[in-house]
Amino acid sequence: MVFTYFTDATALSNALVTKQIDIITSVQSPDQLSQFTDNADYVVSDGDSTTKELLAQRPGRPFDQALVRKAVYSAIDTKKLLSSIWGDYGTHRVDGPADGPLVRGPHAGEPVRPRARQAAARRSGLRRRLHLHPRHPELRPHAVAEFLQSELAKVGITVEINTISADEWYSKVFKERDFQATLQEHVNDRDVVWYGNPDFYWGYDNPEGPSGVGGRAGDDHEEQTAKLKLVNEQIAEDAASVWLYLYPQIVVAASDVSGTASTA
Image 1 (tube, rainbow, N blue to C red):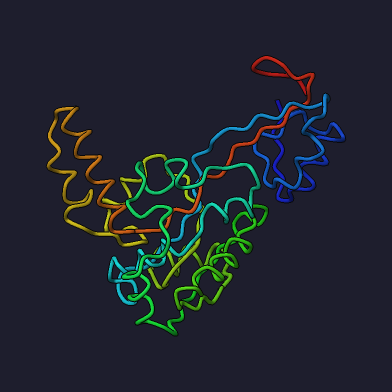
Image 2: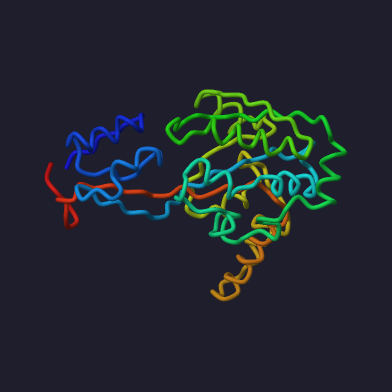
C-alpha cells in the first residue's frame, strides 16, 4: 500500500482520474466532486470528521464580556458559511455538535439579539486583526475569513485579515497569545480538556468550567457524565470560542476497489 500526499486539491483529483491512485481518503474541495458523482467508475462516500473550523478570541478587551462574544457568535450565519465553502457537505453547528465541545450553545443559530447588538455597537469602530494560518490552503481559509469579515461588519466590528506562516502562528498565537482572534482548524477528539487548561492559547478560564468542576466530578460514572454536560453548557454559554462547522470526510474510490485493502 502506497500513501501519497497532495497539497493541491486539483492535483489530488487528477491523480485518481489518471489512475495514479485508487482512493482519495479526504476530498479537500467540493468543486472537485462533480466528475465523480453519478459516475459508475467511482464510489463517493460522505461521512463526518473530527476537524472543526473554529474562531478563537483572546481573553481580555475587547472580548472580556460574554455578551460581546455572543454578539460575535450570533452575527455569523454559519449555515450560509458552510454552504458557501462546502455546498451540501459538512455539518452546520445547529445540525450537529459543532457549537461547542459536545453540546449546542443556547445562542446557536439565533439572530443577533438586541442586547448583544447594543453591546457590540457600543464598541462601534472596533478593529480586530484576524490571524489566518493557511496550513491547509485547499480548505479555503481565506474564503472563510472574508465571510467572517462581512458578517461581523453587521455588528460594527471591522476585521483585518492578517495571513501568517505556521511558525509565526505557533510563536505569536499559540505560545505568546499575542492576538485578538485567530481562525484555525481543530482536530482534538476531546476538546473539553483544552477548555480546562487556562494556559492553552485561547486562555479560557472559568471556575464553573472544566478547570474548576473537573476536579470535583468524583469517581461515579453518572456523576462524571452529569458534570461534563454542565461544563459543556457553561463553555457554550460563555461563548468561549466560535464553532463554525465540522468538515466533511468525503472519500472517493475507484469502483473496482473492494474490501478493506487493495494493491496498487
